[in-house]
Image: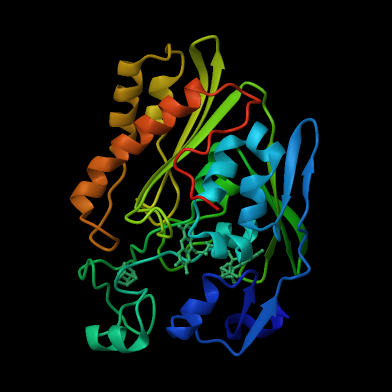
Length: 318
Ligand SMILES: Cc1cc2nc3c(=O)[nH]c(=O)nc-3n(C[C@H](O)[C@H](O)[C@H](O)COP(=O)(O)OP(=O)(O)OC[C@H]3O[C@@H](n4cnc5c(N)ncnc54)[C@H](O)[C@@H]3O)c2cc1C
Ligand code: SF4
């Protein structure tokens, strides 16, 4: 159906992002293709965990195995929006959620008064008028964590099934932000298990009860004693795709976990983040806070004992 209808149709899972955007006429489609049939099962194997794309974020955030083995993922799922939206929003929908911008996530009438922008109905970027591209912000909480964990998605489309690393699922483009074919459905997320990996996700937003991230850090660290043998640091909400801080990862590898090393790593991680004036609060402040969320996430991950249930600190009460 999706291949036949092309841009006249969209998939809907929980609808928590899609329905408000339909109301604001950010999407104008004739047909919605429901994804109710997607698996709502979390399958735990010794080497991996497979999260069905239909699993709700509430289920993922409370799942005992995810909390024990992939604490950062459960934490990120538990920090998405609000309890009612997590009861409906799905793991697959969160990986595919639209990029955001203050000039785009507005009603039709507001956008019309502002003159529209190239992401919908217009032809210029209102944030960076001389730019030929859209800088809308990747705002998924779980995508950076899935990348840090080396996650792989299963995709099903008209040409059959395939797997794709989550890191390869996104483009650095606010409009055409997904690298999969539009008619491909994300059917599951596979997280490879490594008993030496410790993870954490720290998110900054105005209201802890509901808002999208305005900066976030997903980290996965492998330790041998107190030496870092592997490290992934992926930033949320500072670019049009989840942004991996590769220079900081390289810097931390081989070092001992110490407060000053973590601080230095966080300084390096913040450098590639270039927030623009198109999300909540000042972009200068958001840029400064990237260092802080990375430092907090690294400190939290490196002090977590693998296999222990994650603390509920910073999590919404639900
Ligand atoms: C007030 C508010 C606050 C929010 N806060 C956050 C937040 O803090 N963090 C955050 O990450 N999100 C936030 N969201 C967005 C949304 O609630 C979540 O991202 C949610 O996980 C989306 O999942 P869903 O199943 O509802 O997706 P839907 O709304 O059904 O779909 C979202 C998009 O993904 C596509 N899609 C859905 N499932 C699939 C699939 N399996 N395969 C291919 N395409 C698919 C749809 O076509 C659509 O383009 C917020 C939304 C609102 C309204
Ligand atoms: S970044 Fe520019 S083109 Fe993209 S949604 Fe915002 S104003 Fe529109």
